[in-house]
Length: 279
Image 1 (cartoon, rainbow, N blue to C red):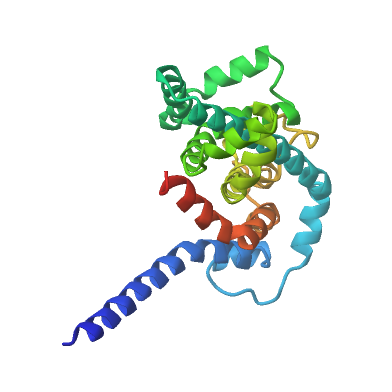
Image 2: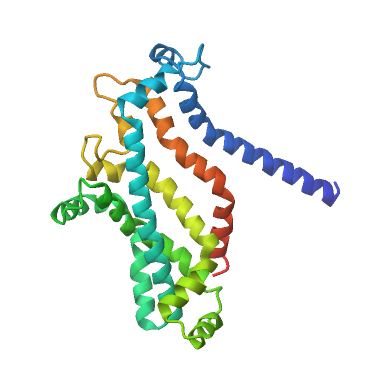
């Protein structure tokens, strides 16, 4: 067998395996979308069958029941607060750590990225008590601020590795022109971080928007502070689970983040490669 034929066979086999894995991962999502258009009886009788008719009334009922517009705004506010803090503090911290390399900044860098290794479940009770004391629990703004602590370590790691690819001569040129450190970062360095910044934003939007455990611990059960994912959980009970409404609510919750991911997915690969490989 020729080498060219072997390469083609290898590529075909590899693509086949990738397609199989993609189907395995996508199929549960497909079931969720499909079952959101079924009445309750059809889901109970056969969850994997196609719907006999599209139950559009599932969506109208859920949108009205959970006050979708208000919860959507809650998600947007929490996500925006979280993303702004993560990007600002991570990028500026990575800039200082990279430009002022010494023993102390290496220690600080280690301390910042270490929380990535700590499971959330080990600190959630302590976190809940602490946030209650400082009045950040039960608040949409407070929940967004809490995401800073969980998102900054990974974002700083990505920014820091990408920052190594930006030559120090740019800083020196800006200082010769009279720019301060803050002005140099804001006007010269940060615009060069576009690809990695978009990557951090997309990854954290997917995480914050669809997070369940932290909002469950920190926000109230009423619609004033509840998120879309928590609203879907209201249709699941110990005695009775309204699967058709729960599936519909989950679709309404995850679709915005999926759309953002599809539109910006090309930046994820660019930013992760730039931040993790070049460094």
